[in-house]
Length: 366
Image 1 (cartoon, rainbow, N blue to C red):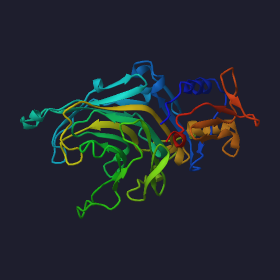
Image 2 (image 1 turned 120 degrees about the vertical axis):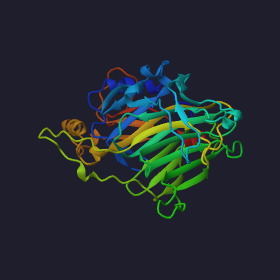
Image 3 (image 1 turned 30 degrees about the horizontal axis):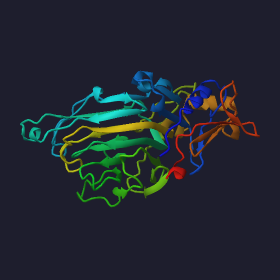
Image 4 (image 1 turned 60 degrees about the vertical axis):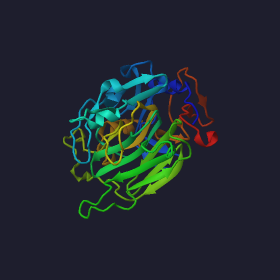
């Protein structure tokens, strides 16, 4: 994976200074999928605290990471499927260099013999918004330091039967140093108790998960496609979450929509001595995140009821005006009607501004 350039800051600055750009959404070049929203958290630009990390999230408008995500701080209870309690600590999440770091603290073998056993000290992030729906969701991360079990996960979650997961399992390291687990919940049929075919798939990746790489899943209406560094790795039609939007409604004449429940985006690093994670790593495990990039619809925008989006798009000329939709091409975003205010940019013959927004150019770096 190519290192994210500092020039991405040009994109942030230009976006703040443009009078019209992407008001009617985004179209992806590799799939032609169209989405109304985008969220970017680029930790290469972060000064040193989560509060200072700049957010690029236009609708709803946010300015910092802590408005888009919440660092988790809670203790799980034990159960047959969760043999060890897990304690999420805010102190296990921080900015280091160009990455956001999550930590699972080392757990001694002796602790497994204590009654009751102490919790495994872990880390998790959850989006503040819970109305994410269809989208292309991407997280660049690497995992380091295991001597035992840990699960590094990036996932969309609505409930235990509506979940899309990308996970690294370290329990068999180093024999599984490139294996990525792609899953849609549930794994087991609640009636028969049998495993559901194709609900989870261990796939051998193109490079070790200790190497920084982009993990992506495209959540479509009838399928989910998983990618590693832009290469399609797995596709499934099993357990594709479906949300009934019939309850979405305009609640007054000002076209204010009800916030229709959907899913959240989460990242976590954990172990619980269960069959999935295995015994917790004896050493600290870290998950280093370079960026989070989402192109997506909300449940409201998919139902046509996102009043902020509808107003901005209509004012710019509506979706019928192709210049209001931005094209994303291999990490380069084309802004349609952006106004150049002295920021570095490349103006095309057609007058569009191509912002140097290279998050990755994976095929050339493999």
